[in-house]
Every structure is written in structure tokens, then in C-alpha cells.
Image (cartoon, rainbow, N blue to C red; front, side, top):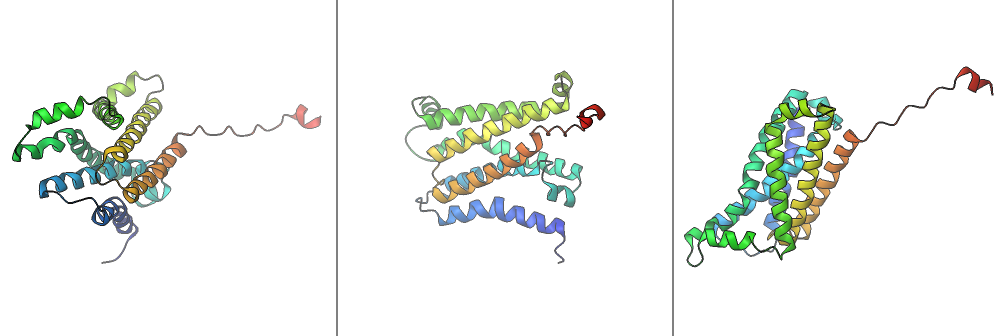
Length: 223
């Protein structure tokens, strides 16, 4: 199979955003639990990695634009984002789901206890990130009417959408580092590195273009 730029880009993305989390998960020293619990943990790690991958699809990524057409990037962005969003929005319920197969506290009681522990900074950060993601998803679904109502239309939408995305990513990453079972130093470094690069790409896209230097007028040139 010939390694075309398109295939090379896809393989690189899979290696970083899928292979990276799976590798650090396998090398982590967290005690293994039931197959269901570990499957939920892996799905959550990959979903968050997929959310970070969205920042790499910004138009400032010249390499990506040179390999794929914008409609192709937008389609992949949408499919990956919605898949990851479903997993992350279900994350609070998935955490307590295995309790239905265990004795002791019921899943609903465990869920209520978890979200009501507002004394835990990690829980609070996770709840805020969850609400931000819900709003971000609703905004993406209602994108067209929102763009029409914004004073600067699409440009304003990009700033609002990007702002919510960055806010969610920061709070979700903080939450996962504070409470995550598998976000040890290596996994945290991976996510922090990906987030930093992704934010930089977004900033490069949104950063106001520097005004071009004005050419001196004839009068000014004579002085």
C-alpha cells in the first residue's frame, strides 16, 4: 500500500490520538478492575483525546489543508466531535453504571452522591465542563440561526465556538488530572501537550492580523 500524504496524515493522527492514550493506559500502574469499568475508562480517554484533536483541524493547520479539502475536514470534524460528545456527556452516568451489576449502593444513589459533593474541586470542575459541553453541542446544532443573530456573523461564531471549546477543554483536563484514575504523569503530560499545541493553532487562527505598515505620504516622505 502506497503511503500517500492523506494516508500518512490519517495514520499519524491515529498513532497520536488513539495510540498515545492506549499506550500510556497500558503502561500505567493503576490497578485493573472489571472489563466493563476498564472499557468505560478507555472510551472516556479516547473521547477526550478526540475532543483535543478537533483543535488540530483549525484552518491554521496548513498541512491538513494541503492534504484534505475543507469540506472533508468539516465532515470528519463533525462526525468525530459528535461521537466524542456522546461519550463525554454520558460520562457521569457511565461511572456509576457498573454498580447495577454489583451489590451495595444503587447507581442512582451513587450518581446523586457524586454530583452533590460540591466540596470537591474536581467534581465542581467536571460539572462545569459538562454544562459547557452541553451548551457547546446545542450551539453547534443551532449554528445557522446563531450566526445570523451575531453582529459579526460567522466571524463572531468562530470566537464564541472557540471560546467555549477552549473553556471546556481546560476545565475537563483539570478535572481529569485531579480525579482521573488513569491520568497519571505520563497521560497528563500527553493531554497537556496536545492541548497546548491545539490552543496555539486556534490562537494563530483567531489572533487579530497585524495592521500592515502604512506607506508614508509624499509630504511625510519629504520631511
